[in-house]
Structures are given as structure tokens and as C-alpha cells.
Length: 281
Image (cartoon, rainbow, N blue to C red):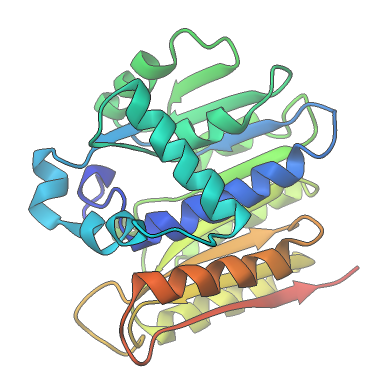
């Protein structure tokens, strides 16, 4: 997987991640008190699906392009699709919003966003798109040290979205597990959403085991597999770990994932699941 998200924007993994992101932010908005949205690997903010990188891989053709018929879409998916239309109306018909743009659209006047990225070009893009919004702070720093400095936010409520470059991670993602445990230790009441690729089941089993051994008390694992996870050719599925999921998230995530699966894959062995890794009251 290439680190720069321009190659993967709008693919099936984005569709899943961004739909679930909509649900997490919607839950935070149910209370009047302010919250903070932190995106640790924020990327460029907006991508051009007709640009060279997206056209080179064509991954969006098996992602967002498959949702042309969205009749009966679950609420989170409908909100996500409305966000895409708003982004295109503001910029261009081939534009695709990343998690920062979609997240910011969900924020209210009292809420705040912190976007991080280590790449200079990505940070410049974020600052360009969000320069006029006083609710947004953009930082060029490595999330593996930057997140700990940002939490807990002054609002004491919020969502941390973590979507790191997995080409830099080793089997079972030990660096990521260390980041998650450190962040949860410092801010145990925050909501965390951690995206991960599913290529081989053995690595995912180890990843889950490390998380369960961490002692974090409330964790969900959401998986969407567009083909069997023993396929050695590439990205077989997309996953999202959710720590401290809001009330009702489990049930709505199941509905959302099932609806997306029917539209994102024709493989006879496709599957989706939402299960608890830890659920201790």
C-alpha cells in the first residue's frame, strides 16, 4: 500500500471507514457540550478522483463508484454521501473528501478539530482548505509522539481517528498497539477509531490478541471483507477498531456494514462482522 492516500481515495476501505466515522461523530453531537475531533494521519483533506494517482490505481471504481444506487441507505451512509455531494458542489465534480473534510462538516460552532500529518505537502493542503475556520488546528508532526501531546483535549470529549501508513508497520502492528495503549492510558474516556487493512488473517489474530491483552475494557472490531482473507494478492478487507463505542453503535454498525457489503463486493465468500474484543462495564 502506498503511503500517500491519493492512490486509495474513495476505495471500499474509505467507504467503510467514512461511513462509520459519520456514526461516531453523530453520537457525540447528541450532547450539547463541545467535543474535539482529532485526526492523527489526516492526509490532504480533499482528493481528485480524476487525478493521476487515483487514475493510476482506479481503486475508487470498486468503492464509491459502486454506490450510485443508494436507495434505502442507512443513515450513516446517507450522511457520508451527502458530504461527498457538498464537497463536490464546493470544489469540483471529481473531488472526494477525506476524513478531515467530512469530520469538519459534522462539527458544530462549539466543537473543535485537530489535524496532524507528517508530510509537508499534506499539511500545506490541510492549511489551504481549512485556513478560514477558527475551529481547526493543523500540526505537522508524527502522530506517534504528537497524539500524546494533544490529549486529553480541553473539551474532555471527542473522537480520535487513527489511520497510519501500514507499510511502516510490522506484523501485528506493534507500534500502533503501543500508541493506542499510551493514548488510552492518558485519556481513557475518549472514543478511538483505528483503521487497519486486512490482508492475512494470521496478522489480524495477533493484532487482536495484543489489544485484548492490553486491558482496554471496551473495544469493538468491525470487519468488511470483499474477498476471502486467505487471498495473497493484496487488500482483502478493511477493519476498524472502536474503543469506547457510543451507545447503539454496535447495532447500527452491523446494519451499515451489511448494506455496504452487498454493494461493494460480488464475491461469493464476502463477509462483514462486528464483534466485541472486550466489553467490561
